[in-house]
Length: 525
View 1 (cartoon, rainbow, N blue to C red):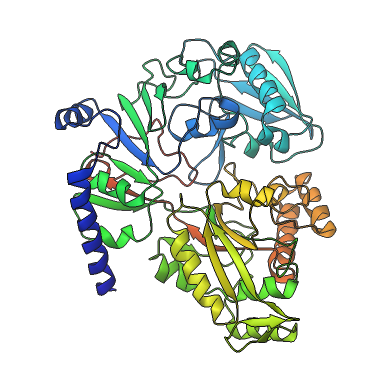
View 2: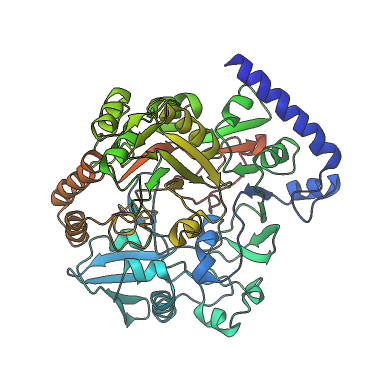
């Protein structure tokens, strides 16, 4: 471990030297020492992310703005894993189809317009028409205005997860529909217009950065920061070096190795969220060999040493994955574990015999697989490399390919692939199991082609079941089918969302739910 630490420190110091003599500023502004000093005096937060926000189109990109303190949602899934009102004053269930939404009269858009029932109804109807996420979660839903600050949501079928759906960042980000419609498709004209309701207003957006200013009339009070700068930097080392070099305050989507690099430092700190809902999902392409065979999928899952990956490869920055859901949920089943001997036996009994080069062969077909990863999540490289080594011990030959836009690559089969590693969650941003999207045969993110009528029926039943005890029973049965019986998908590790921060933000607590900048975000005392 000490040798690993010394090597990493040498590497990062060398990169730091190159960075200092060759770099341009991370942000478009602030490329002088005086500019950086002014940022600090203005209480500017400079935060770096790996993902670029591409436009101000609220249907396709609106979820990013709630992550960085500009947009807000109707409900929120809080740190204690409970659903609470956000811009809503209350949410009440009338019957199995109808829900009453009551707005807070004090909430206004950043441009000064009030958020009343008419404005909210316009927003919800627009999202239900245009947003794939809204349509997938609430198909056929209707909206009815009751009074100035009250409306009804009427679902097509009973839906016990409505509160959770209203806390999903991509379903109903709150924005001024009239303003958005006025610019047509020239969404860049929305900058500076105050289209959202959050504490920070968008000033500008380009390929390099998003700039937000304090919303002085924010409904919860005056925000603590005068300005937020969100820089888009895909290079992990550059993000961390920017924090070291005082060009940034917070870097998110950082590699787990950073924990070792910053141990014992008093100027730069490595911090993590206290709990997790996000993990590394292993997706099998079941439309073609070899993962169209249950035995191969189950053997692959049993051949992964989950404890080694979480504790050794990822330095304890992740929880060990023991099942389809993270620990802490009442419905979590721990039915996923490493068992190399059983994996070998499973493959052998199914006709996969070891070849001369220790790669298994069946009917002339080598057990060669292509695993997809993507560059924006740095930990996918060591995770995939570890799996490659572990699976070689039981006879798999694995090729790793990194691609941008991995979801589209899988969806459209742009290149031949057998499995992939993707960061997402079995639990949505609203705290509800995502089975209807990732596992159901009609799911919009069922990229591996799972098609199980029994599983579909259980998921459909879960979708209309209000009784909590019955829901837990269904979820446990579903997990048994997904993991133990069929090996449809596995989670490799569950991430405690790390960040590298400056001394000024040493008490920063990363979000479990992608809310990186909130009304509460401020420098440490």
